Image (tube, rainbow, N blue to C red):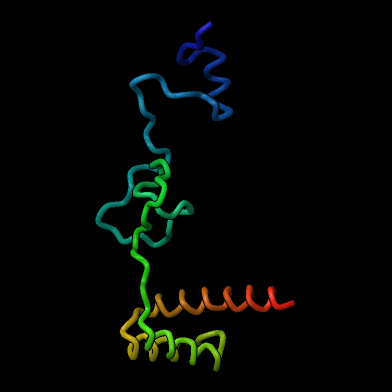
Length: 125
């Protein structure tokens, strides 16, 4: 027997998250439309989606393209990392100005480098 929309069975499934959309229908995003014209403060937990409710696409690029650091930038970042694993605000500003990168890129590079360092030291045990 077909479960019609708003039947007891259909509503029970709906409350458990199991209800399917009716043919020709689409449900609106429960989080609302994506923000337009406003800068996004937080990344979606499912990075790489054009919209929060959009299905995942294999190989989809995240919102910002990957930064490819030059050899000179990497040398300076690695030198700074060897001196201090956690970067201070002043050093972050200095590196950003010298390397022509944003402070956010510097911060992210240090976070990623600490994770790489942690993996390397754990593998060496």
